[in-house]
Length: 219
Image (cartoon, rainbow, N blue to C red; front, side):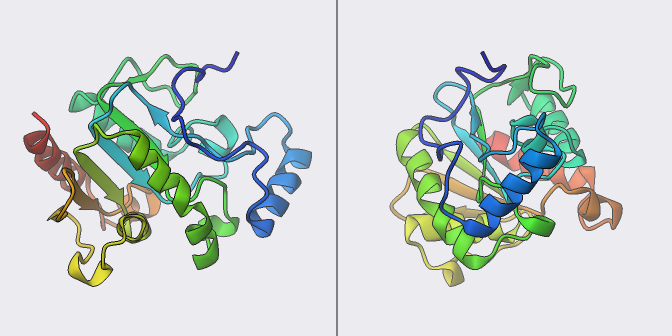
């Protein structure tokens, strides 16, 4: 039994999803080179009845693609899970392994694109192809009240999944968008990648300020 059994989202792509040829080719290549890795569409990591949904871009090669759990095994996860632990959206200890016992509390984490893309850059058609899984995830979790988009692509694909015009809700770090017709709000942050933190585009204090706003929205 997987360490994540019982913690997956209910509406994720099949592990052998054939939808994107370029991503399938990379998956096959990595299965040959690293058969011990997960090498499959990464399923959502969730608690029961989550009120916060965190949306990233795509699995990292040696992170989620290797471990099978979103944001696990790379620097982005170090910052994300530390912050979620500090704000009560996770419990336990994060050790960058899917069997570390970490549990989410009132939260779910997923990606805009569920498979590893070459150079971590999914194409427009690949993002669009994976969008129905994001919409299905939202539909299956009516408890969600706040969505945290990590980066512009996550922000834009979320709006597109809801059929909302991107121009009306421009991406801006620290922004909170009320969504007409929906009971959830959208929060924006630069992605918590090592590149963004090393260059100073995103500091830990900037990231925590976004969670301050989320915690005010979700008492």
